[in-house]
Image (tube, rainbow, N blue to C red; front, top):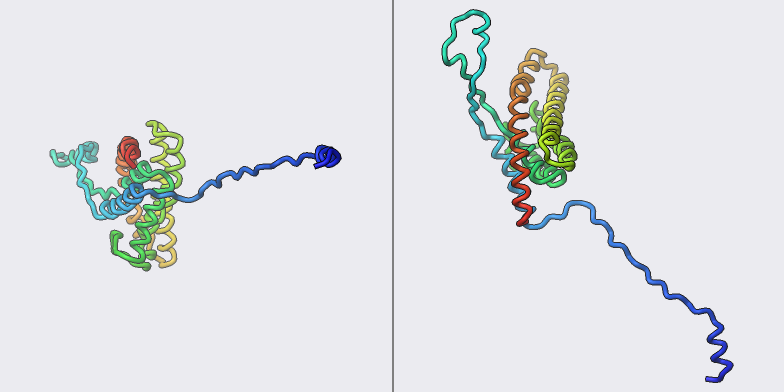
Length: 230
């Protein structure tokens, strides 16, 4: 190579090599490991169990006879309530799995009941959407979303109470609205509607709040233990 050629090469601008860095794309959706998948299916099965589980809750009360002057007996101070703990089970699942996985577990339960197995209280099949109580089941999904969003801020006693209050109230409110829509379409008497609402969302809502709060706190510690191994 002659001296003139060397000078020409030196005069040419040097090209800078640009290295493109490709940022990893954020994966959206739900990533399931084997352990999480097993836990998700177990929680769906837990919903089925809670549907058919009935607890007899006995506690002391102040009878109305005490104020009316009527004679009272010991049995008047004892009250037994037959409680189906499905709503507390939903709150427990949200506290354990978090927002996304709990919604997936609930949807698995609903799809199973509508298209595969009679896992609902009165059976199953797609016609179950015309049952008065189906609104409560559908309401599990938005309730899980709202409860999960609140619990993301922490499991303090105050925040847990807030999450449970919003979740339980959402289920009962939407369940009542769904029932009233069906009743109006069927021209059902409002006497029946009132009795049905009292039976499903009367005293029961108080037990739902109490047991949901306890179970979410249990889920808090169980979540810590399980996430160490899953």
